[in-house]
Amino acid sequence: LMSVDFSQLGLFVLAHLTRDPNLVEPLRTRADMHRLTASAVLEKPAAELTLEERQLGKVVNFATFAGQGSGALGLSLGITPAEAKEYIARFDRHYAKVREFQDEQLRLAKERGYITTIAGRKWPIGGLESLDSHDRSYAERLARRATHEGSVSDVSRRALLVTDRALRAAKLGTVPLLQILDEVLFEVPEDELPVAAKLCADSMRHAFELFVPLVVGVEAGRNWADLEPVTL
Image 1: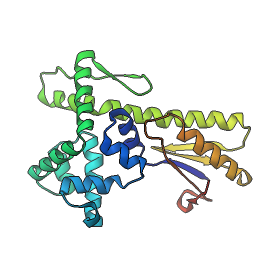
Image 2 (image 1 turned 135 degrees about the vertical axis):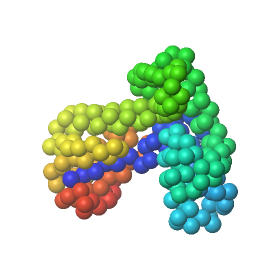
Image 3 (image 1 turned 135 degrees about the horizontal axis):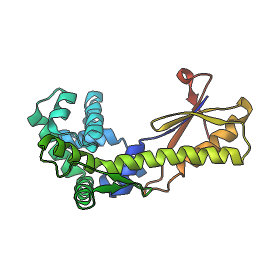
């Protein structure tokens, strides 16, 4: 088995969509994004953060980029909604371009009734004019994050299709077996591994040419539990 896995695909796509410098530059230099977010929300130098505090940054990244509110974030972190609200406010100040982008997606969804992904797909967003406040709030959260989430799906799906076509064109025996979120598992004849690893990695990395080039990792082994890194 060979695994080709995107590194932090969601963050790379978000950097492409928003051009937020606090996303773009750290991703270009391979900085630790979760540590940087923790530093911003805890207002503490990155070098002084503990592993637990770095983990907090990871939770805040995934939750807040996905549009969670203070109540849900507070439950995830075991803190009060008021504390979570302050974390979100600091997050918004640090990633100001991300918030501007999400606000614009909500405005466009209200104006047009849909959002458009990186591949040009239209995602209808219903409920934005609902008289039910719960339904309307859910639709607004969806509208703010749908362009990003749909675009991540576009990249991962195109990566699978482009790679499959490249393998067929090269007449290799390697075949895609399973896609798990941002990872694709391939079944590879052992003698093909060096060639297949490079071809699949290059194909997935260039499925979309993003503002910050995509990064992938390759591992191989006899089963999914025993994969080891492959040097390209």
